[in-house]
Length: 132
Image 1 (cartoon, helix red, strand yellow):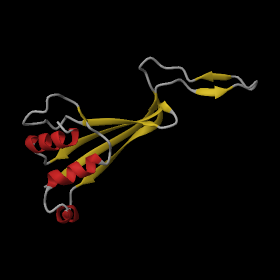
Image 2: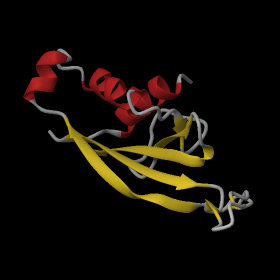
Image 3: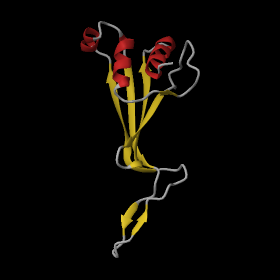
Image 4: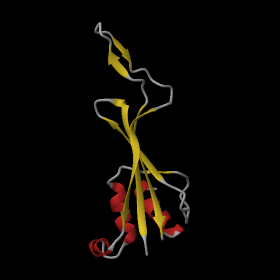
């Protein structure tokens, strides 16, 4: 069986570029009214459940997924309420604002469960991660 977690990160800014003019004046840094600009292109990593994981988590693929996803900071499911079954196209998301730059540097992260997950297993993971 192939259990995979796809984790995608994208760093954006919700403010226009800021800078200093040759005369020393400041410009930019204005709120973009909900729009964003890319600071770092999106990249996706995949975590795949293997024999080592099965040994470490005593064969509990749900506990493995919850532990891996908890480390990413994603807690918001793409659909409410979380029922008894969650389809493969659903995801969890979260965001982290840089402590000094605020909404000028935001890491947006999403996680999807792909592969052999049953809709019921996805629902268990979603409930555990989102604490619903």
